[in-house]
Image (cartoon, rainbow, N blue to C red):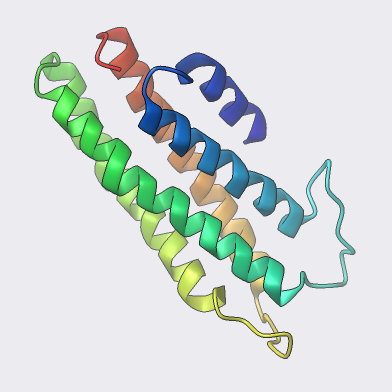
Length: 156
């Protein structure tokens, strides 16, 4: 996921200020995800859960990323796709519901874990974090397909 985001930054960075900010938010969220999950290059004791503050901070980054996509980037894509070929509009219409599904997973995760306390048990956290990771990976794939299509039609 981090590699995918780095490739996206290299490919579409500088094309639009909102895209740059969004890709930066995506990277910050991914780094914290990797830390919480204990994925390389970050390590976590497999028998210990992350600190409540780390989970809350991650949820904030997750919501920033999801919100920027929905309220800035996707609006820009919709606006730009009006002058795009039919295939681009069809792709957007195909992918937006799929992206929305990943948003629901992110919102559910946030609702469950954003206000955890040090006393919270975080029951099911690793499973929920894994499910969220799968959703994030799918979301990034969908988003990158949209950006690629806009780039091909010089709409980005």
